[in-house]
Image (tube, rainbow, N blue to C red):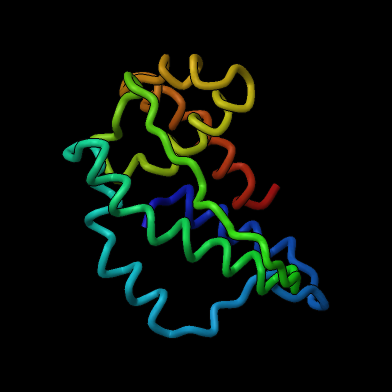
Length: 145
């Protein structure tokens, strides 16, 4: 497991109040198992063309609407459309699985600040340089003062 992802999970459980309940609960035991079986298809997107990616992700877009309906408890007769999915070209792929959390944090920050154009500027070298300050933040938070 990536160190940053483990830290984020620990930080979330630490901040969670004892009275809070999770907003979404999966009661279908086959859903997580089927996600684990499809892990390779989701992580190797650089090797696929647009049609294969759409074929792989389309079932998830169908499931998400049912999850949203069950959590909001709204029953609607309107026909739902699957989420639109498109892949922006020239965004670098992460070749190193151990840096996936750092890459994710950088993509979220870049997209929040300047949109897709800023995401295109992230390179493998910038991921390595961003990992150092993030590791210092994690170290400062987990060590006693």
